[in-house]
Structures are given as C-alpha cells and as structure tokens.
Length: 114
Image 1 (cartoon, rainbow, N blue to C red):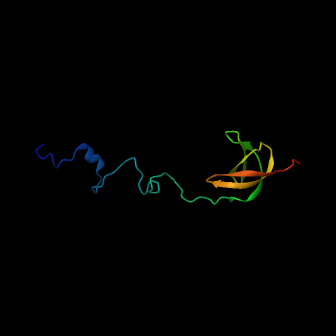
Image 2: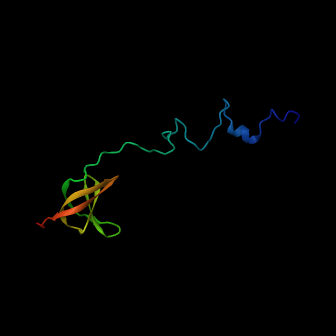
Image 3: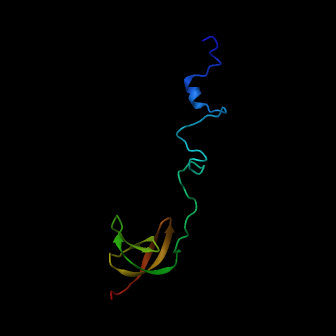
C-alpha cells in the first residue's frame, strides 16, 4: 500500500476501458443500435398524409371515439374523426385538420344507405 495513488480504485478499474475512455455497460454504442440522438429506434421520416385540409372524401364510419363524441373512419389507414356521426354511416366529409396519425373532419353530407 505504499503507492496507493498509482493503484486505481475498484470503481475506476471497472469504468475505465483499455484506451482510457470511460465505458458505460448499459448504454448502446455505434454497433449496438440507437441513432445517436438519445432515442431508441426513432425514425424521423414520416409517411406523407393521404389527406390535406380542405379536401372532401367519402368514408364509412367504423367505430366511435373513446369519448363517444365522434365517429371514426379511415382513409388509407389514417384515422378520421367526424363529429355528429354514428357507426355504419356512409358520409361525405371535409377535412378540417391533419395531425400526426389522425385527421378531423366536418360532416358535409350523409349518404343514403343502399
């Protein structure tokens, strides 16, 4: 114990790598995944929306929203919320707002059932 300054402590031995860099065993490196911005497998590129605000579309209402205040239809997988509709309605809607993964629309016309 005469040269205690040159002897690294147990913690330093574990955290020091072969070339003097600190190593963190629970973090991902370049080969272990991640994209370097702190997120897991985050993809910053999004699919463009199949609808735009102001467009009119015909959709079938498939279900109700969780709150029960709007019918839910889909256009190419994109969820469309339409107030004042119920399950089974075939409606013509005008898109009012487009968000990530959903859109809202106003009811333009309820189509008669065939």
